[in-house]
Length: 434
Image 1: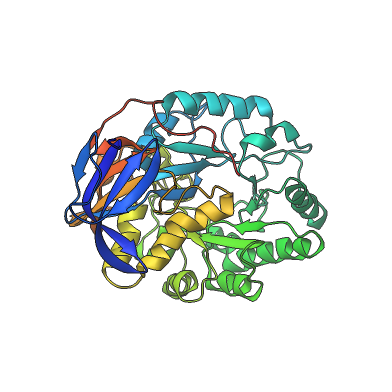
Image 2: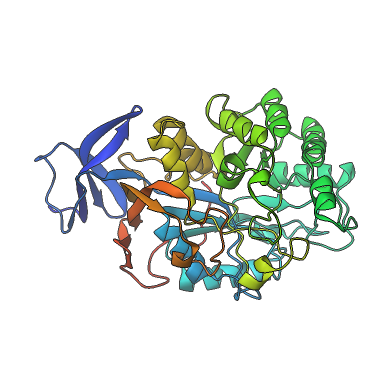
């Protein structure tokens, strides 16, 4: 009996080595792996000679906006960007407008994403003065912003942090936090003050406060977008794979602040870009020391006028869904990151943290969420993004990997620059933890 799809004679990664195999897909799952000429008959076959067949990336840190911020991004453009970037699963942050603090808002986002998505979409919830427990079955984690609380009148002192850690422990959810001990009262008047307020010292102090709370309540903490070498060292000192995890963004690992004049907001983000030493140490923390578990894009789209204004007035955040795979795989092809580290930090690592074990690994019986990649030299151009956000600090950067085909749940969503299905046809919304 014919399987649904055969990816024929592609390059798969087996024990950190490249091996030519065909991958059969049936009923949304990976059916098996075959030598040339031994493949089952497929209702459809894609010739993958010379191409890499990899697990679809899982990006556990994205801001897809939608609802009241649809001019910046919506679930259609955001998930199209993900699919074009080889990302098959995204998890949406709760600091939207309105923020995800109630079941009502979560339901609005689920309904909107279900109708518009091109990939799997999961959700996080924030923690208001009272936590709406009815959200728990449909979220993958809790997210807090000590420097910019989602609820007015909330201060992230040690009592508040302990309450959040206790809540995460009670519901067996990871508690993600933005490590920054600055407060909303601190308004920079110069660029220098901006970087001083959001310093590495501020990042480390915030992490330490959450680590102190973790001593009393053994919850799962996840440190978002680590940007400083000192933060990575502190994480390594308290390393605990199941209760303390962390992520790094491609921009914090590959760019440093001294490369930009910061006259506008094209390279403005929170946390800000750091020194060349920090970028070097973050790469080591991800690969050599395994202090950092995964890569997240922190895709944070804004309209162009919010980024081209003066630095202090500009919004923080950059698009990342269409650049993560090309950037990180370039590090692999140029020998700075191993295949094992790539698969861990972009695929299986996020799946483990989120509790979605059927994803993130190219193996028999796993979900057929797959990206086919061509090793090809090209240059990043924001004008070509499917995201509504077109301005990127990686503009013109040479990369060596191009997503060719993206498959979600066994369905070909994106192939050779074209979308093969419409919105809302494929993808699980919401993704639920096992």
